[in-house]
Amino acid sequence: MRKALVAGNWKMNGRIAKNDDLVSSVLSGLASGNLDSSVDVMVCPPAIYVGQVRAQAVATRLMVGAQDLCEFEDGAYTGEVSAEMLVDVGCSAVLVGHSERRTLFGDTDKRVAAKLSSAVAAGLAPILCVGESLEQRDSGDTLAVVEQQLLSALSGLSPEVLDLLVVAYEPVWAIGTGRTATPEQAQDVHAHIRQVLATIDGPLAEKVRLLYGGSVKPANARELFAQKDIDGGLIGGASLNADDFLAICRAAVAG
Ligand code: PEP
Image (cartoon, rainbow, N blue to C red):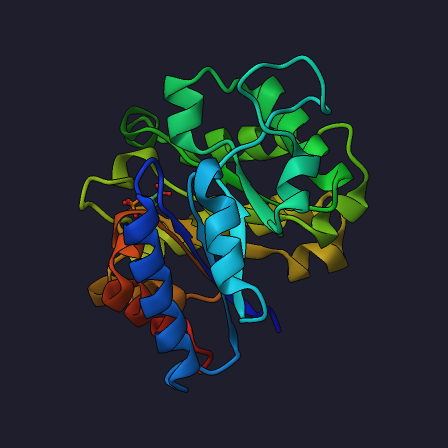
């Protein structure tokens, strides 16, 4: 049985005071007993605020992740943040290959693979984001695109990587658009992702958590999370509102 995970991707949003309020509200929601421990909860603030959020969350069940990392080890890479640094400030996970990084910041498949490898080497759980554009969906290429992104990100790595790996299926046309994949559309892709992972290692593939992301809201979360291969969500916009985020976390409670 896989434990659900709901991770909030704050993207480039936040200020010290706002973060403090948001995290305090999420923590009081988590402490109120309305959310049992069958769900792991994580927030991924901008790198500059990771330390702040981690200090607030330390000794609570709220996990902290980062939104990106540099593929290289520490050294002369001005402006970058390494996997080891993320571990040092208390991150347990990092998003890799988010579509905004791929389309706006030049994260090629090759760079995504290098980032994933760096994350794993440092002991960070990579949350690998994959997903097709609207054009690719309309031309019937969804499964092939997702499969290619997945295999290229994992190429050259040992099957044990699946022990740490989380995959987020995020159709590009659903991110921040208010358009969500139907539960059936999402389940079809998730089932395919699990099949592809099983070609690497069958038993480990069963343990990999597959998140859905793309305009998840309190109103649609339960139906999505009820699908067999959907083990939680990667939440953008709605993670900036504590009530919405907590409602989505509650929708992931088992059974
Ligand atoms: C995301 O950025 O990962 C995301 C899923 O965004 P949203 O929930 O706003 O669509």
